[in-house]
Length: 368
Ligand SMILES: NC(=O)c1ccc[n+]([C@@H]2O[C@H](COP(=O)([O-])OP(=O)(O)OC[C@H]3O[C@@H](n4cnc5c(N)ncnc54)[C@H](O)[C@@H]3O)[C@@H](O)[C@H]2O)c1
Image (cartoon, rainbow, N blue to C red; front, side, top):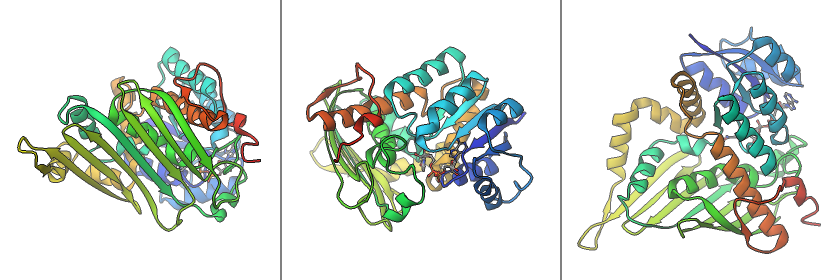
């Protein structure tokens, strides 16, 4: 039997959700919600076969009427908490876009609710769903590359002022945050997941270089992980909007793994250290292994990772297991990100997990 889905929020990212639902078996779109009915109609017209889908203006009415198995939360980030909470309290699983919430106490509440209700949350952490990532993570975790020393991410996801002007919530502390909270949080999640240890300390600096927004368009941070490894983070929207790049590197005693997206095209390079001290290139081995395990589907995910998230959520509900990017990933990445913001605000290293509540709204006035 198919799982019923509603999409709440019919803007930019919702198109990726709709395309994913249209390509997968076992999912049936039963409604879309938007306070702007034109956005809802535009979304439904963007993919063939959805023109007759019911449109709602109020998410509570949609959830009460449809009683969906899955609610996809694709509204501005500042609204995630209230919709995620209502949906779970009314029996729905979630595909919840990143960031989970704008404060660590709200993220904790959503995570706890997922545990107490047994409802699954798959986060919109697309990077966990890129091909080969999961295989590499297992190899790092089982020690194939030796001790993890450090990792880096560079997210250069250029957006011009036209992007920020396209919706009032973008780039505001209350509803979005800046380049780190919006464009970089799921990359931070991936790096920590690959490195296999939780962050215990954050230090950061923020800047506003080019964009006319309230929050940062450039952030740099260092994390210390529980296992002693360090992670370096660069996240910015102050680069060319025509060239989006995200790159991850994990350095180990006997291996170096670099992967990323360059203008939406994935790339990977894996090197291991041979006993004679020379390096061996392993990229081809991983590509073949992924193809054997995931077939063509994994390569379709490279072009639209949301397909991987929907498939994982569908299977996790049917098999009663946790999704790959689960509720804990949502909570933990928000907590780490807010630790980074707090460190920048208070100009000092901050211990993680945070011991007190902190929200993006606490950053209001940071650049004044
Ligand atoms: N995982 C990813 O790769 C990815 C990519 C882009 C955006 N996102 C996330 O998705 C979310 C949406 O981003 P976007 O760029 O699509 O935003 P958007 O502004 O393009 O779309 C948001 C939509 O929500 C609607 N909306 C606002 N309030 C509503 C309400 N109360 N009820 C129903 N609809 C409401 C708006 O009218 C709009 O159509 C953000 O949290 C963002 O961080 C994730």
